Length: 496
Image (cartoon, rainbow, N blue to C red; front, side, top):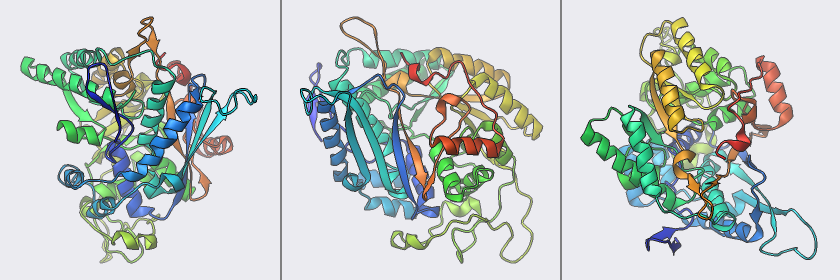
């Protein structure tokens, strides 16, 4: 791990130096992939939704060096013990797999620089500007852990070499003020800022500020609560809960592997429940292929019995999180149960099962109009005669004003709320020279293909369509998807 001094004299770590410096849902999804798709090959692609923000060749070289260094990190004994004792929903098989896991960036990550000008006078100059392209290839179970560290490194690179007119002054106080405002207004929220953080030190300073706000709120009796952070490394470092739901990647991968876009949401839910159990990690992400399509799967009953592979012992979903199927070196023989067993081994009919909507704690809103989403979910739960109070987790480009607005709207409809606040916390800077906004990069890394088929995402907003255009169009046709655009969904100008 390298570090450089900052203005307050404390060392500033460079790059990524822990496998746990990632979001929790990458580990939970990896657990499912290990169980059901351990031999599936995938690709990932980088998209810069702020294409006017260019990189220099010098920045590219530094980024390549940081990516190469990812090969040197593995989980320490303390980190493994933390996962065992804190993330108890991760299977024993998964923990064993992680104990020897290493990334292989020299084989799996392909980074290239594409200069704006090909003139001989600027060729190979470190100051030459251009775009970077990044592709990841390999087994899904291995490459799934690249996304968050790569995004964090790309953001760090840009603000280390291109936009340097900023410093860390006031970051802790700013985060504390934001935390105080959310807590005083009764918001339950988590820090979700790993993927677009300015750098490691920024996220560390932000969490220190949020913890100060948490302690003040506890002393003052404020109703709000800091639920935790999505970053597992920082959760371990600061003693707060690691929190997470599930990403679009899980649904995208299942859809591409099965080529069953009509049924993929139910299959993805089925495997999730069979891995972790009912009510565990129970926030469902609805918008991968449009929320209306997802709700068709969400109202279906949870199969009472599933099998991990042909000939495997049949298990109930509630005990699946404690079941070990085979050692990691035998996983190449695992086959996913595309058709789950829904009868008992003794031939008796399974007892009536609750629906996914009943057993999941709630849903996450990540695209489209949040207010329309609240209305849609209220109508759905009412139509399913589900009277339990459900949770809506909002996570799409939030700030304080939006959190309070969505909280009021959701509570009026009888929902509990939670907020995953990311870039607003970990990449909120002004330029030292002018006081103007220092705009964050809007970058994403999405699954490009799985098992040789394109992987796509539609979402509830046309601005978040991702993947092969022909496949996107075909999936929309197959699903009868109605195009949606939202005035607040301009991805190129989300934060500046």
